Image (cartoon, rainbow, N blue to C red; front, side, top):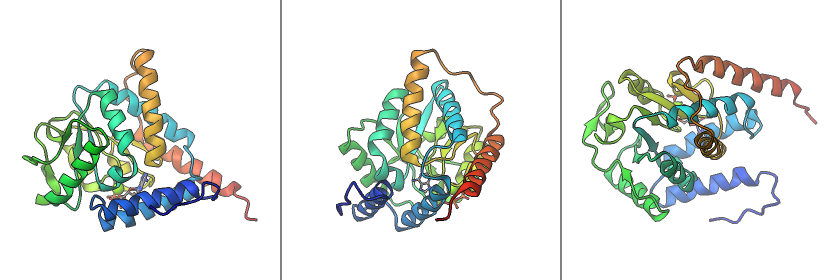
Length: 248
Ligand code: ATP
Ligand code: MG
């Protein structure tokens, strides 16, 4: 990996790029994933590369939803595996929820590489290689899931997900938590709870909040959680920040 000096003002952002590039070189991240990351970066610049207050509230709601799930599953794609293997594994242990490799540009070889990558980081329960079930309503290859995993889950954490698949999971009656820096993506709009934040920051907060909620009794259930209202709040916070931006 290219060494970025910690004093560089864009250190964190550049390190993420290095991880994505390393993911491509290791065969776990797709080339298209590089472009998706760039779109995320652009939104993060507008957000100010920190967690917005509305994103904190969404993360709290997500923590409660995941904690009260009967069968939560964490979906992992090539970008997630490259950026935050330790954090998805920690979350999987906290929630007692399996990780499931679920990729848009599906090849068996890449599924196995991602699974092995997660296992090298200490994961013990990684699904996705069986691909013995299908999400209904989307075309063949992208629909592959494990029967024991996403197919039979009640709550799916699907970060950096495609809008189509998010919609299809919702149509199957599942609750979907997503993490997506784009507040107007189809994924953000369809999900039950959308966290508009960078995946590293969002998972760090989510892990912290789940630990807190476990200690203090489960979070309040959110039958009436207003995802679109939260997205509107995010957009307002971004707009206010941009209005205040000093152009020096
Ligand atoms: P849709 O509108 O169908 O939801 P999309 O156009 O958003 O799809 P995808 O390629 O499916 O595009 O997903 C990439 C999404 O992931 C983008 O919206 C991008 O903002 C987001 N993203 C990329 N990198 C990160 C990251 N590090 N943290 C959080 N979100 C990210
Ligand atoms: Mg998306």
